Image (cartoon, rainbow, N blue to C red):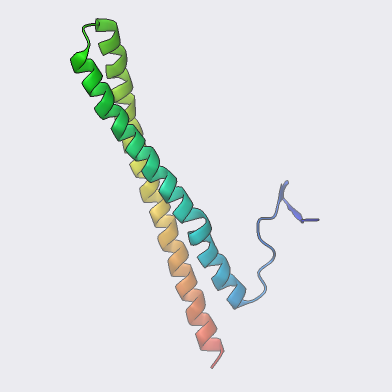
Length: 114
């Protein structure tokens, strides 16, 4: 049975060596950052496609109601793109930190194996 930590199951076991610490830092990037980045990129592409498609629909529509509704959705999608871009930058910063942490730990491992 997994150990509970502050009301949740632990995701990783206790890290007891520098080698395990290096692996944990690298696993975060591969296991989380890459997957999240891929999903954010797909979401951004979806929002861009929505804007393009709805813009064409507006041009081809005679209905004021359709045009008004699609215009509001386009504005929301533009905001979503800005927010997703910001989120992506934040995740990139986290990934950069994790990469730096792994390098710092690798340096420690090398120093203490001498």
